Image (cartoon, rainbow over all chains, first blue to last red; front, side, top):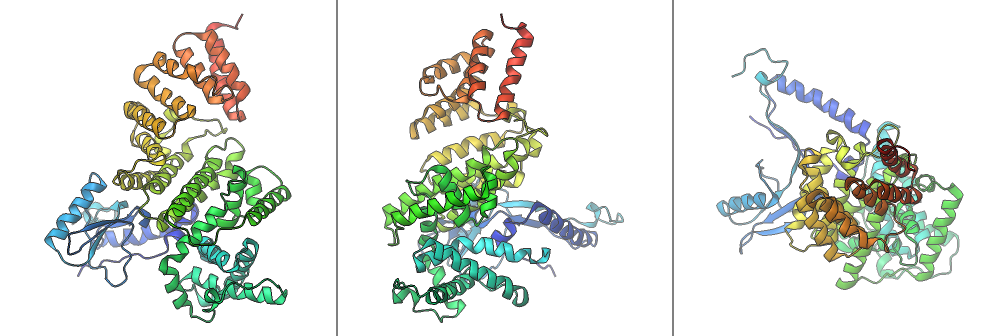
Length: 134
Length: 418
């Protein structure tokens, strides 16, 4: 079974981390990730830009509506996500529109630029691997 | 102590919202600040044992309001308390208060708090000092260090600025749409002022003032969360992020200025550039052009160029022309001349620059650019004269040293001037 582990925290708080605190935290997280990667258990890892960089496509009866800012409702739940390469925000919005047309009705797509992306690492790609990867 | 860093960060993050709400309740800046201080002290007592409250700002507002009212009673203040309807929910649970905060009134609260700092009677440096003290919560000592003055001088400056605001009266009525737009523009200008106080620092000032850039960016993001659909606020925040991204590459080990084209671009901050570009992208979709967006677009062209020679100067020259149309100023024209020199050569740029002399006769960068253009046109005597004027107008030792290099090179090439 694949599990997604989603990260929640205050972006004000994390944004105010000192460089030392940031680097030390990333180093500790890196150790955990390396262990998972060596065991062939690590899928893609992403860090998102702050919510101020977000745009939301709200689905509705009259077609999708583009709203600046993050998805703010609490009545709906996070059900899934896509990672898509886009040349611009316009292209990202167009892509979300395609998704909305394919799956009309209620709900929304929050479009968030990715700050850091690490593709899935299989054992063959990690230094600790013993060469058994395909 | 380190593991309690989260409390400090939570207090700093909650500060604008909490002080802004307390200002609305008490209608007095000093009372609001005092109440917030009390609430922070109680948080330092309660949070380590109980863990963080669900909504730190709501907790601080509730506790600060109660402590402020207690304090007023103790001192037997005779001024009437604010009307009942704003105080009637004193016993409300934190959750109910948090729900109300989500209702949107806090948006105007924070805008008001920022707006009182940009009162037109206050000189720019006082606006900046006040915002850093009241909104960002920097200590008087930190602010004094940034402005290279003593603690007591800065304390006095802030006290005087507050007295001026109190005398002018804080606007407490909920703003209508035009007032809100006006306040937003004034606040954006003040935030950019805070940023530039940090960004323009050179030499020994850099250590004390660099944090001002971070504070200004934090304020930009705060404003953006309150007004998520304002393209100029996106543009302002993008502009600050894109400029600040170069911070680590702008000075050499001795504090001398490194020009944009000579900077080690690998030292530019990738995350700040990505965030700035994403915000600019968002802003441009609105098709409502404004000065901050245009300046951010110029900064973005620099950020996108992997090497200095990849810079799209043609586009930059066009953007400066657009900025001239939006916000005519000889300084903008001077900047366009730099781009024009890259596109059409130094003669075209000099023709654009020369008519600006009456307006910019006291401006360091005017003579710096004029000297550089004359030098490139093979007119060393006139170049030397312009550089000489520039040195006399330098704002810092680093600027003077930079011009000195040009003069030394000219002298080296020509022999000593006759």
